[in-house]
Length: 604
Image 1 (cartoon, one colour):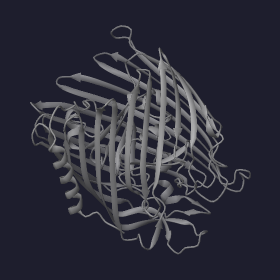
Image 2: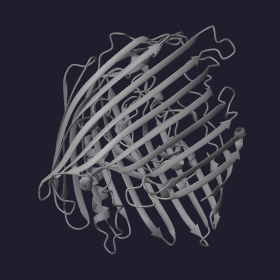
Image 3: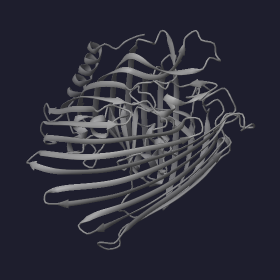
Image 4: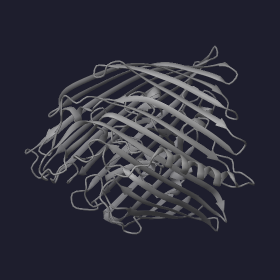
């Protein structure tokens, strides 16, 4: 298998840096990320300088042809959203497998301990999203196990006044509606309220992929005493044909998600203290043969509870410290997996020295103890150094661990057999990056390496018959090398332009002996461009084009287009997805959706 050597990666990074640094003139102001917490708890103002962080804001969500959070996350560089349908998708970042990305909502853990297939079962309508923060690379030192490939934090809208209603319909019998509103505090001390709901149904892009989606979420924020209290609750229901999703059968599945989060933030005596408690309940009813439920049926119910307390303080000029502790408990009742329970206790600390204009360094460590894992420490170190007003270098290194999910240890059906003795996988990772600010552009280049020991995957021998079941195994080790390039040009003759490219190569000791279901088939090449244009002040056009290639598969080009026309408070938009009718396979190795047309209206 081809490999990107560290020398090649360094040469690519240096070439991009020299090219961008040779330009001169007026430089645009980069986006302010002073509220980003996904990559630093101690000093958010320098977070984006030390690590590879991307923020997808509300303006992008309104312009692009996206209807769900899954669609929105897929816009991020390095994010691999392997859809089966709009009802279900798996998420990986930088070549990780499902279950190796941690998903948060307003900082609260939502990833599912039963299986990574449910990590994106979030009860958050898209209208309620303020932004999506994405950390590329490990986040175990801040957020614990499972944050191998990266962290995704969905931040909801708070405090402002807004209202929106939408409806759309189009190909594959798709129809959907959505509505939401935010009621900001009318006076000091009053509560602000936000709520949103959406629903969609479709006959599906092929037989057995019909679905119905419904979700709602509400929250309130109010000053209580000297601090701010928040409460959020959400519920989501997904019912969908799952033909060939996990086995060669006309399957059907229903999932239900309920979440509740209570938080309190207080500034006192030089400290900012935050407390949060979150609960997530998820149920899954899987029927192997849709017309014969009695043949094989699997029902699961998972409860997850998290409690966290953290305190942050500025120790001196340009020196910040955060300390905290977290408790986590998960319980599973399952017809096929049995009754399971896991508890974790964690403590973490992070210190940052430096400023956003000069050099800065952050060091952190987290210690986790659970009933599944021995006590483990996950350290991290990140640094950022300026090299003039238009150039800044950064580097980071960290280590961590991922425990096998309950499905990877205990699941069994005619097509899949888990291994109860499966062990955890351990990894270390490092990256080096540079950001340059040539005229009217922002250029960012990152090279990274991640080495996994005892990597987990569902595998079968390369010469196995088609009906041989997949089994879980700890592969001895695998090393991933990658490079990422992004170029942002806010304004060129009225056009906004974003270009990105990412490449991954990996060496796995088992790659020639086994076929992997997830971990051994990452996207190895991705080249994309995002172009936007405002026409006559009322019409906007946004085009996203991307060529991708997955390990062992052919390359394909996926293009999505949105054209919107707005006047007053109303907007009409037309979405064309898979514009070139690219033929490729989805996460279930079936043909993905072809070209589709959707027409929608929105009122704000």
